[in-house]
Image 1 (tube, rainbow, N blue to C red):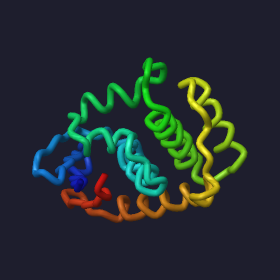
Image 2 (tube, one colour):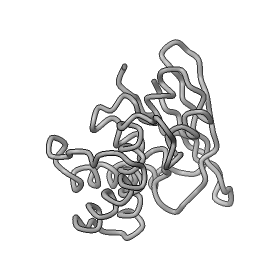
Image 3 (cartoon, helix red, strand yellow):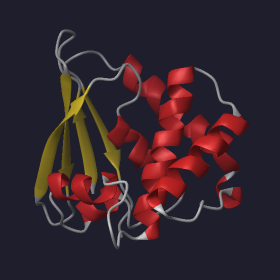
Image 4 (cartoon, rainbow, N blue to C red):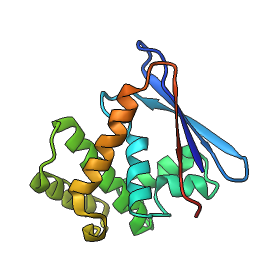
Length: 163
């Protein structure tokens, strides 16, 4: 799946995310500006780095409309939600908090992740194979730098690996 992110004008409150699946079908949504890397792009880092196939973007790649995938993956207490989708959302929240604090703090990241996973009733993901939270944070920071350097009205394209 290809993610096509259009950065709107400076005074706009939303940017646009389009997801074009391998079969050519697509879905899109507005992404609120938050002053840091957009939440949905943090999903991209988590899901591609950890090879997660059942997170928010994995659901979209499999054919779900973005609005449905958001409802399913962002519902903290959604009954029957797969652990991977819950873990993904917990990781994204914890990484986003690190972006807002402007530095990586392993203890804060771990506490945030444990709390978010407990709220969702899922296991805390093992991150040793991915280099831990710091490696994920480094990947988020690298994409954030690309995003921040992108001029207004420009487009960023990212590829999701095939499911």
